[in-house]
Image (cartoon, rainbow over all chains, first blue to last red):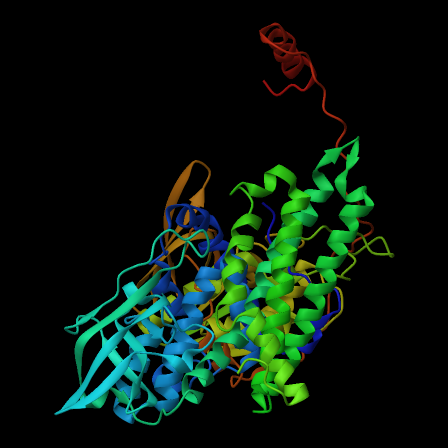
Length: 389
Length: 249
């Protein structure tokens, strides 16, 4: 297949700096050479490509916006977003891995952790020597995480955790879990290491989506962790939500990647597939679909560059991030479905990436705040009236 | 040890080349430019030599401002310094070699690395010419290189039907062939670090072209294929045509 050349109808590359473009092109090349050739096999077999972890670490993909003293690249948010975009052009599962490691594990340790926790964990996570996961969602508490049942109890020299988490990306393969639990009624973050007595992380099976990503339950039964494993500076629901804001930002960019992969595939296919003695790209209904795809990709790109610049100035509101996550995932999924239609029966084969992206995006539309919740978050912001409590 | 990698900024291999309005150059509009792939091997080899034996790696390019993109990539991969011999005028290989040799003479590197050819005009001439102009030994189409002390090296090069090893004294010029190494990706840290590394701009010696491009033409469009027939019965006719008409067997 010819090399992916990017989609840039509005010369939005002009909005990027030389080093941001170099970051994007480097990850693009990495994904073309290391991800695209192997990802369908992993998806089919339901396995995560573990050997990509050290390669991604060597590139500096984990926690890339965090400071250099922890072994990170200290990049800006636009460059980080472009990394997410290119990874998700490969596969949403891969982007999820990097998103979780960076935004949901390294970020909370960086933001809420002690100097010892940072010095200990951040370099290990940046170098891929340790994998992390983030435990917030529970079987009965998804959109309403504040209702969580998982409890922490203060005991001599530490804490005892009891409860269960579900839908946890990387759970089974994680060396360290950032776990949210109520301590005397207040939500606090805790670090639970793999192998701690009373902690298990069985993998969830039977997924039709995100098949090349590990999804797990976390189970805590009288799980005793040492005193120093509390994220002391965390407190209340706001803390995990701050992490989710990071991850949602990455998703807003990431799904441009899946959308571009689907558009690129559909455009090439439409130009080469002949029906009624002409390429199907010659039919108005195909053109209409392709134009929709291009338009939404272009809008999403502009939305993200602007959002990234705001985030770099510490001006991005979480509601603005909700808007971008909600919009970009929705349209990426529509684009994936349309691409499948253009490819006809061929669209369901794993010879093409569209069905995989489409199935992945069904999850992405729901995780890190459902499409509906983001609607209500923005709705509350503009009307002043919360519609979900 | 001073290691120099000469790098060119060329159209991506995926480019569908269009000939410009003057009929003598390519239309650069909408063309994606990248570091010349063979020069990437050159940069990588210099970095590996530095990692093994110490020293500094300097990336040098001759061309206009867009060449900075390629120099930036070399810096992000790990080069210590970059120099742009800034000049937009059309140059043939001799003229490029002359300007590089004039600059490299004052720099006096121990090792000068080129890609074996630039994939734009495909002359595969500049490396050899620079060596000649500087009076240095050279080994081209190199797939392996071992230093033997400070002053000598053994290069393994591709020759028709096999490989040969040649010993050269340093300073020397080498041109890199695919297979020499696997170029690294610039790491994100490397890219951020490259922002702080300067690209020094220098005025190269003026063009002294020995050749002039009169015209450029695209290859003739391929004719339609011919279906000789179907089934085993068509084989003898196919063989006859391949033998007598196409003359390939």
